[in-house]
Image (tube, rainbow, N blue to C red; front, side, top):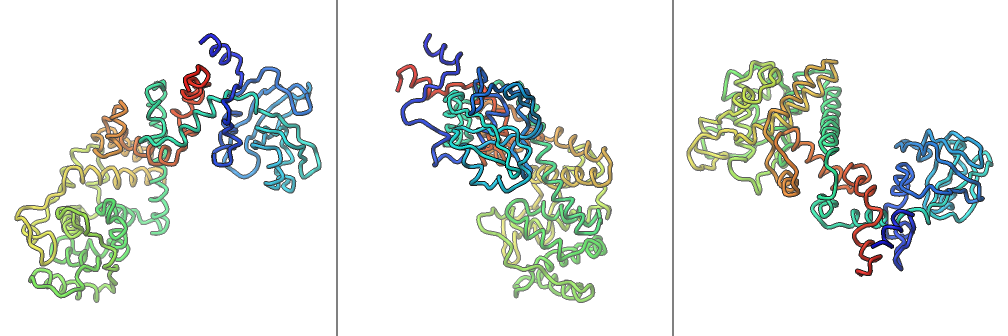
Length: 466
């Protein structure tokens, strides 16, 4: 154990036989990892020298950026006593400079240091200037490389699950707030693009967002196509007439194109035929709708009937849905019931268990989270009204957490999930970070890499544990 401690303190790289993660061609995260190690100074800086033997002091390693050009900008280094300010380029081998054709790109003329895992040749810029290099191969504790490799190849629910208990979780809440904002901004961008396409019509934009929300995951696209095929101004003309409202929704959804046995769908067909001729409407394609593997209460026919009741209940401007930060008020408004023909049917000519088809509590909460909140957040940015974004955040903080497999997975790791704001952040973390193994962009993964100079495997190897 004393030997292990001394190795950790001195940053000695004592790689087990056959272990060379960064030079393993089957390991696809080499340059990304090396960039992170350099930016975070996770290498031995003692007596650092260039490939020419000049002493190198890293004053500022630079900061990573996602644009084209050198990997890190705003770096400052002292080489042989000379102070340099500029950019840093990172490669596994020096020769990759030419493989990537940097010598032909003037954008790399301001590179003051070439950071490589293995220095195999001298390189020059487009201006013909030789770029000093620093080799890190013998300066990175191999445990960090092994830890990252374990994260990349882990078969756990999330890559860090086996080590999750080792992480200092004090930064986790702040990180989740940032991830939540990223999720809202991503959804906001979709609403903004829709708003632009609809020529700045706020009500029409909400109609499209609300319609897609009623499709939930399975039928979001068909509901979106319905919104495209049925302008809100036409729909609102008939919101006081339940039959015509349903005729427009079902007809423009393409669900009235077959011969029916029941009288009610035949009546809707007649109404739709007259209304579509009057307003010049063309239905959306029927084939898009999905019924398979759905429980009858979730059939799109039931959802359309519920949407018709919501349109009839609205004030014509949707202020009932966009003007409140009280989830209870919105839930009472959203939990509409499809009645009439739908008391005994889940689809046309398909009778079912008698009873009202009321929008469930989970579905109503989902509409607030996935339709109303993104719309408010986006319109707050579009109109420059901060109170709309604040209303969206309050709704997420006041709603209970969603119940799904992702939330359950995080709860199993000991993460508290008490609000919709927290569950939304954890969904984003799982899908966008864990699912894509973006561990170097996550506070959990970076914390593990900073802590683990020696991974569990590496420690066992050094201690003779195999």
